[in-house]
Image (cartoon, rainbow, N blue to C red):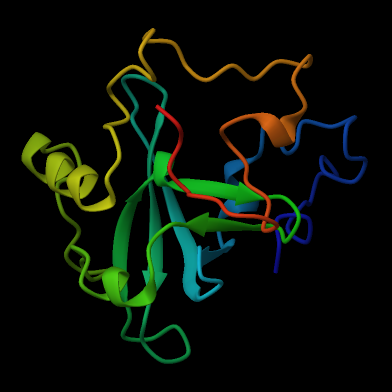
Length: 170
């Protein structure tokens, strides 16, 4: 099921007139599929974790493994490691199944302290991303995303067509 199917308020019905996909409701992203850069199904997003001090999205909690949604591990995937594939209406994570299977994970009854800097560094290092608390790029500014630049040319999205890497250009 894609975010368009979970759009109870109709914000994605008329692409280009509503907020999506530049701005998207967090509730519509819960349950969104995540695929590898090799087109492997890696699971789906179960939660989106917000840093309440900065207002930034820190992590997506990804469920992977198990049978029929039971017994799988949860993984905190840095938000900046995910790319929205607007063509296929899913996220792309540049990690294959084998690497994700050995990623630091947790179970639903034993969540880590995601605010712990040591834990954050471990996760960021594993996925090869910068911390969400660090400024973007050389200039310290977030990637430019304005109405003058087509959405497909911003660092937030990636099409399935062509060669791509799910990590943002820094």
